[in-house]
Image (cartoon, rainbow over all chains, first blue to last red; front, side, top):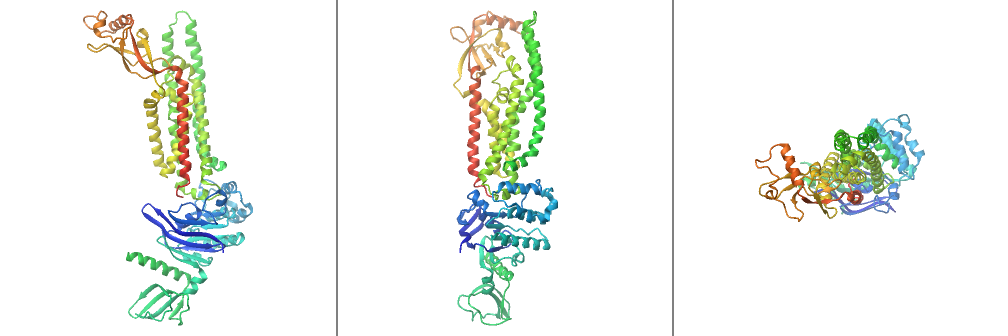
Length: 290
Length: 341
């Protein structure tokens, strides 16, 4: 399988601070990847590295087989909606479309019009006067008409109300199906992503905690309830992600590729949010012990 | 990309052009007025009997010094204004509003983006400055002919092609500093500071030595005082002339000794026949002393860049500042690829 993104040992420093450390991951072509993590976990840094807005301090990254942002032709293949959806506030909606048409040789006006349907009446309004939802809509139309092979969105729904979130994600998924593009989108809320993603990356404090297909993640993680101080009975290779102990019992969140014997309530499947939170909690705990 | 650059720049451009249009109208008016005054007062005076040309010249210069100086100052500070208000914000405005993250992910490289932006703003600045410089050079030409010194800092820096060199330097400098500081206000401040320092240092420390100066011998006579040279007669040291400027030239020596035909410095004892015993107090008495000394066939030597080097100096400064601008834009094009988005 070809990889849309391949990073090896990727790192980025801002002065003394590591924004991203030793990040190794592969994003298969055609997948929809959710990138989750708390604020300032390095999500924007990773996405900016994928788009070529930042150059890595260490390691390498290859996007669609080339160094990100290496040429105009390569830039044309990657679409990016940056955090907080930057637009030229004193340019109108129509002028943004003109900008897109002029700066992108592969511009698809039909696709732009299609995604701009909800803004048809606002073409003459300046971008600075648009609501969060309208900004997101315009940004999506701009990026859609590029017909990118890889679409990167940095917290695109953060400023939207729940209804607008749902609509935005639905339109995004229509677009992805239309373009057959690979998508990476970030959020600090996994609930935004779990309905649309088939891959998940959990990032905390600049490090990748978990990366893989959603299906694999869901089938290999368990919550175990057992009497306190009884670690036995786990298959070989079981990794304890998080353990909470009380006097009477322990709650373990574990990863195991082998099935774990037992039944509810002693052995439970987890949903994606629970798994992600366990990994984030583990990273935070480890940091606090440092 | 040209469309986008124009669209972003349009408001500022129209505001500036509006202001400069006033200046253009003023320069046209000034040029016509000065020509009329020159024809009637100077040319007319030469033709008329009983008209003192020195008085006519002095009054002509007095009348037009202010009207010529004001636009000259505008042209002198134009590079700083354009560097600060057009150059410095060119990149920082995008970085501060995050729009670079929008535009750098369209299908154009940063290099191309910068080339169009910088090229466009640079070209517009050049055309504006060129227009103003040509107009001022034309408007002030009669004034410069009668009494101006083309090597004066204000005159040199505001006429002909030197301003074009400064403007290229200023625009690129502002843009580069914006890229380095990433913030508009610091970029503006540093741009202003550097252009200010350069405008002080270039005429004082660099221009006088662009070519090896020549030594000019000037006879001491009644003209000396008209050219700013004041005579000093100390009791023990040689007599000296201070502040003399050679017409049309860049005079480098401020104070120089008065010498006799043989080249020997002249002392007070050598001219004591000209000095009244009781000392000189009245203006009339002093003029008498000067006339007496002037009759002794004395001269003084000055270092200078002669008037006929004016165009070579204009070209050298134009070339040097365009060269600096190109060098800085080379840095800018290297730097833009590594600016953190």
